[in-house]
Length: 146
Image (cartoon, rainbow, N blue to C red; front, side, top):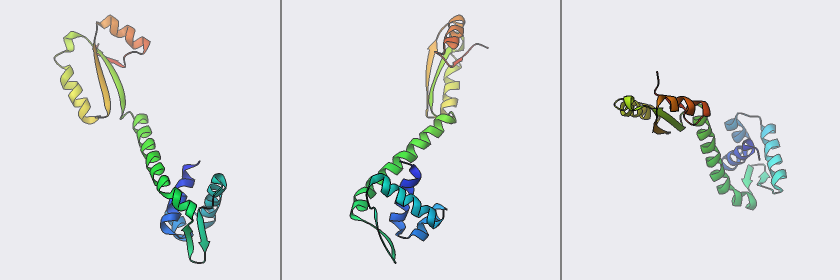
């Protein structure tokens, strides 16, 4: 199901007016009508009772409304996490370091963690030669060799 259809369902259920829902969604009334009809067809359910006063959730629509809100929240969370991953603000960072960097590693990690709290850092002490090999194999993302 298209997330756009879910948002249209929720907005129409909340506003009970095609005109108001379309305005809030920044689409035309015919476009909203088409989306609601498509969702109803896809679900094989009548979600709204329509009359001259607007659109009110049908019994089936009432049964699905709370689930739609939960699903919309989950989709929004999913998209937020995907954006964090895409922009490098969450994930894992494996760092190889030599013992000669031991005195500055905590300061660097603390500084990095304050800016990127959702990135898990794993520190691995190894020789410079091992760091090069692990970088080439993709087992570490960063090394302390300069």
